[in-house]
Image: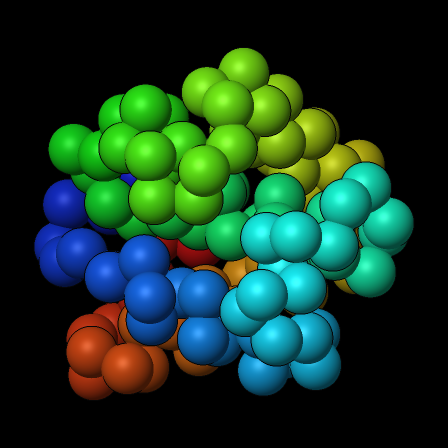
Length: 111
C-alpha cells in the first residue's frame, strides 16, 4: 500500500471499521492478548493507521493503543509481508481500508 497524501482517517474510525469487520469489541481488540482472533485485526489497525495517515509516526499509534512502539512496527511489517504473499489477505486489508475511506467519501485509489 502506498502512503496516502489525500486525507487522514481518524484512529477511532479505523478502530470502528475493524471491530465491525472482525466482530470484536473495542476492549477485546486491545486487551485480547495474542490470540489470532484479536491479534490479526489489531495488526491490520496498525498497518492502516500508519499507511493512510502520512505524518503519523509509530509512536503516535503506540500512544493511542497503549502498545509498545516495537509491537506496532513489527505488526506493520508482518501485515505488509503477508499482503505480498497472500492475495486473500491483501484483498481483506484492501477491503477494510476502502470501508474506512468511505467514511470520508473519498476515492481510495492508493491500494
